[in-house]
Length: 114
Length: 109
Image 1 (tube, each protein chain N blue to C red):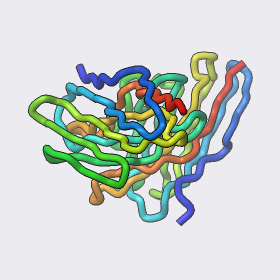
Image 2 (cartoon, each protein chain N blue to C red):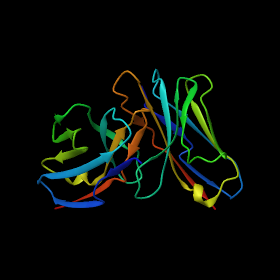
Image 3 (cartoon, each protein chain N blue to C red):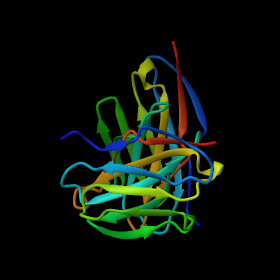
């Protein structure tokens, strides 16, 4: 078990470009979460999946953000037409719904929008 | 609305004990979690409370009072490596983790 992995670790992009991040959860974890975190703040919930179904999406999330988990394993988070305010750490976590739902986090993808 | 409150920053001395408090108001309750986060790294799980009382795990203990909407994380025999942010998170009725802003703990020699 290699833990939750995220790719890339760092992404620098120009305003208006699209970016896509990947998350590979711990194998057999049925739940997968995406969060955004800025300096000095706790993680902000974006969305989560149970298997391949997207069960919840933050009302704060604009239509520029979309996430998929097509086969119930890895997930991708896409941000279209990036803005400077999107600069943050994007964290992925996974859990087993029947094991206290303890979430295990990946190292994150740091996005810088210039 | 949902709200998690914890102190922004605390300072303690190596070898001492520190208590980090967390109060919460959420729509439903399905457990309270404490995580440690070193600068630039991902949060790592420390403890989980769903029933009232104290959970002890080595140098770390966590307490929960659901009727008061209150928890604390107790760190004993502080070491320099304990310098980090400590995040309190509450799982609400939709099984979403609502997070506090974190408490930055500074350990001095």
